[in-house]
Length: 117
Image (cartoon, rainbow, N blue to C red; front, side, top):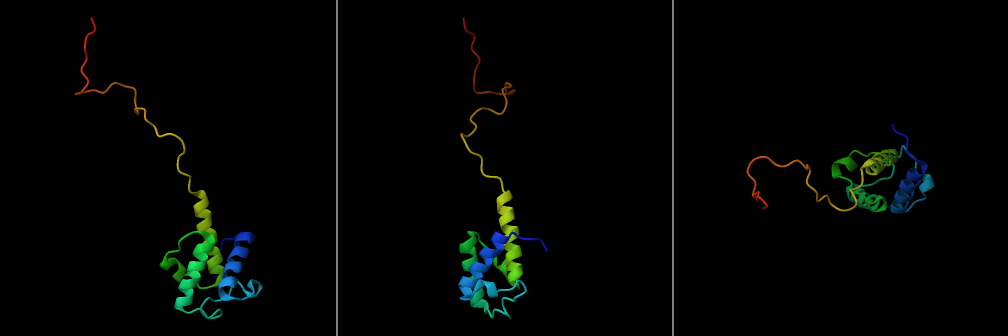
């Protein structure tokens, strides 16, 4: 299991605690979302929304369905946020307007050559 940062874990616990209306310090990594925290399917969907809002990302249904414990949520978000940080930003600046090559084109061209006298 990959280790996650303390700030990330803290934020996850705060988000879960807020949604569950409980002290985040009472949450344990091994707590089952369904059995220990007693979340039904509707509450799970609501929790997904809270987590998505808190972390500004979207979680596919099939991904959240695999999260069974509090630690699963922390690990998943750690992996997702790490992936988001490694995506290169879009290029900045002016678009390239020069031709790719300075070599003259071979073949038919619309430009006619004129002899200058």
